Image (cartoon, rainbow, N blue to C red; front, top):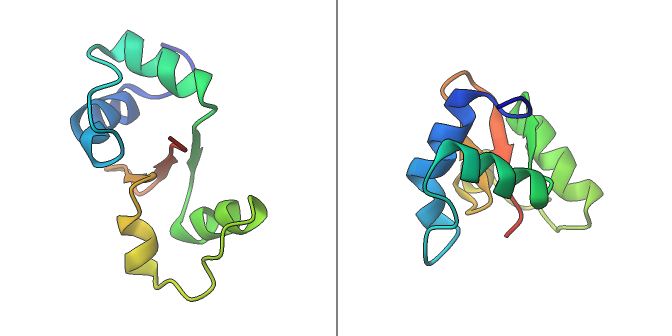
Length: 87
C-alpha cells in the first residue's frame, strides 16, 4: 500500500455503503486499487473539500460545512483529513 494510508483504506472499506449499493472492495488491496482507479483524493480540511467540488463544477456554495461533510462522496478520516471518492 503506497498511495493511501491504512487508516484511509479502512475507513473506505467500513463506510463504502454510503456511496455504493454493493461493496466495491473487500480487502485493503482491493480498496486501494479501486481508489486509484477512480482517482480518489485525500485533502487536509473541509475548506479543501469545498474547493475540490467548486473546481470540479459542483454547486456547493449554499451547502453548510455539515452538509458538505455528510455528502456521500466525502469520507471523514480520524486524523482530520477527508477522502473524496467520486462514484
